[in-house]
Length: 120
Image (cartoon, rainbow, N blue to C red; front, side):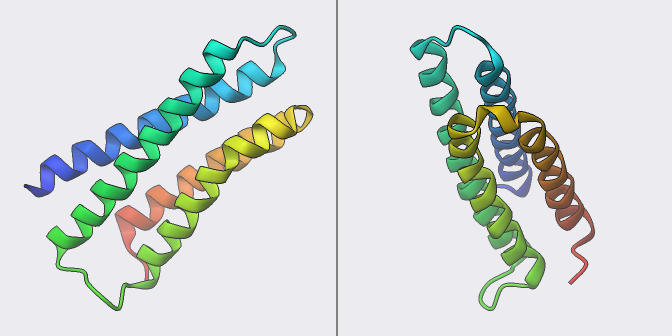
């Protein structure tokens, strides 16, 4: 598959993950919580993470990046793990929503910076 295909798939994964995290943050602050929204958020988050992983490795392959991976790619995998665990923190600690809100933004900004500039 082409580089552009993987890039679009990767961006779709990014949109899904951030949509799910935003939805989880808003849902956690609502007085009445419905299970159907929680399930939709969890599915969107999981599928988005899967798309990010598959498309991310596809992009690396198209760039000719193999083992050993550069530090920027390894750091993006760490960010992927953190973003993956963030949904559990949002669900378990809804009173700390603003912390998770800003952490999500910082992680997204850092991931975008690493992808665009590949600093190391």
